[in-house]
Length: 494
Image (cartoon, rainbow, N blue to C red):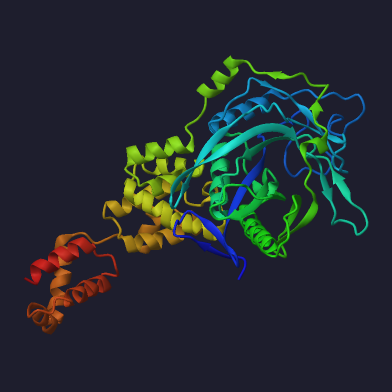
């Protein structure tokens, strides 16, 4: 049946199983990342999210006649910083162009963008996949201004326009067609977002429109080298929807080709309710936009000293931090990759292990803490459990103050209330009994009450050992130190 997806013997491949054989999916992304900046690319208007409609619009943003754009140097520096973060060529010379098209929410009738001479050239980022690492090429990064927003659902017969976004600085990051599956797209977007968050150049908040992507999808027979005709899925604003759109679009194209039809190069939209793509318009080529250098903006010539200063001030990025975590903390590549994926998670981990056991900290953060955050759908910055309290809980386990089982009980209270673990341990009476004399007296009593089972154990029924451990834990309310219990029992039952 056409459209069934499968994994080939090469586990890194994502193939569509059609009636005429297997098809490879080829994907390229154009990620639109909003520059973290207090003001817009060519005006001083605020970029604060959530303001009332049309309250953050200057005369430049609304295209009043005679108004001239003035470039925001900070946005330029943010683009350069991002370029350095993705190991890309920084172009000292770049040009702003006018890209002409007509929408109600584009007051100028054109968008100031970059075409032949972008500010950032080729680069690459490395993905950590289940099958190993893979490098994805970056074609370019160029700066452009965002359009406004058309609102269609406030009135049955009218469209409203909010120009608050008009003129906001965007970095369009164009990948090479190196992605081969929805999972790789997931890893690529997350890695790119992580890099920009580390750099502070984009907050990556997809719910607020700070990060979205146009997804280019084509298919070709497995083994073919020639690229197929691509379709662009416009403005997808979540990774999940990107993956769903790719899956649907690839199957649609395979079905068309195997039916003897041709793929039309076009722009499509993804309907999240119907889980399908639909045609929006025929795909424009560059000449359709009538690009030409913006006459109001001189070519941009970057000072090499500025580039070097930005490079010198770069923070430690995810790949560098991952290598350090593996080397300094003896973490596995998987553990290190998970812990450096978000800047705040890495900082939380390093704060915890200042005073707590690294291995225990790794297991508790990746396991119990992450599960709790996912359950509540919150970030680590919003977690009721702070690094200091997490360290105290872990130290309580490693010091033998409480058992692992008791720690789970303490954690359950902490994750909902943010309570001090020391107080919870005291109030719940969860301190582990570690006095050998006290435990020996308890064990003697249990052995005395179960003489028949002691005899059975000594006659060869070794499995009864767990019965004695269980009895001790039951009588002690789970507070007996398990290691001490085992040691004492072994001596007593010789």
